Image (cartoon, rainbow, N blue to C red; front, side):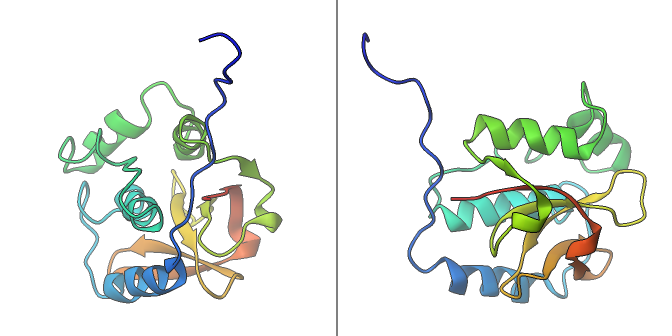
Length: 154
């Protein structure tokens, strides 16, 4: 249609998002890491679904498509140099602008250096100095000095 902008509107956070963030992090503390169920990508996807009140589900195309690390590689790294590049593409497609990691705020998404080949995705917690990522035995806190890239969520 002529005269209409094709620019997507940024995601909108629902009103009680801080309580939902706290609940997500608390409920994930004792969950054992499992590819395709409780990994960093699915954790972040759950957060985006929560913070938008179910309006956006970035995990839908990937849910149930892998259950091993090689399967995750095939899904998340096909055509991308690293997990951060994959996350950047998903963020751009869903109107989540990239910001310098030092500008990430509570509830935003970050790609962190966690000492592994791929790094990890996490959510900036209510204490904005730390992101929460899925570890082998639930969520772990990662200090902001290890954040490599960040995207605003709403």
